[in-house]
Amino acid sequence: MADIVRLTRSGEAEAGGPDPDKLIVGQYRTKTWNIFTGEVGRLFSGIWESTPGKVRVDYKEWEFCHFIAGKAVLTNDEGVTRLDRPALAFVI
Image 1 (cartoon, rainbow, N blue to C red):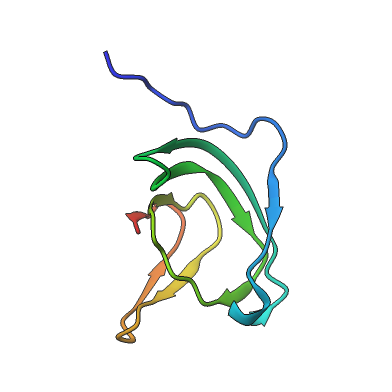
Image 2: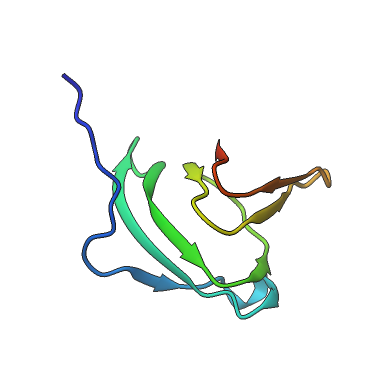
C-alpha cells in the first residue's frame, strides 16, 4: 500500500516573504508548514498562509493548492486571470 501523508500543522512554521524586487503591493508575509517533498524537490505539499499582498512569482516546481480560507487572484504571463477561493483546489 502507498504511503498516506496527513497534512496537519505540526512543529514550527517557516516564516518568509518575497524577494524585495518581486513585491508589488502590501506587506506580504508568509508561514509555511512543508510536510511532504517529492519528485527530487519539485513537488511540495503542506500548509501555507499569508497576509494580503501582491507578488510576482515564477514556479519551477509542482504545487497542489487547496484553499481553506481567503482568496487569491492568479494572473499568468498572457494576462489570463483566475480567482481562487475556499473549497477550490488547483495544481501549479
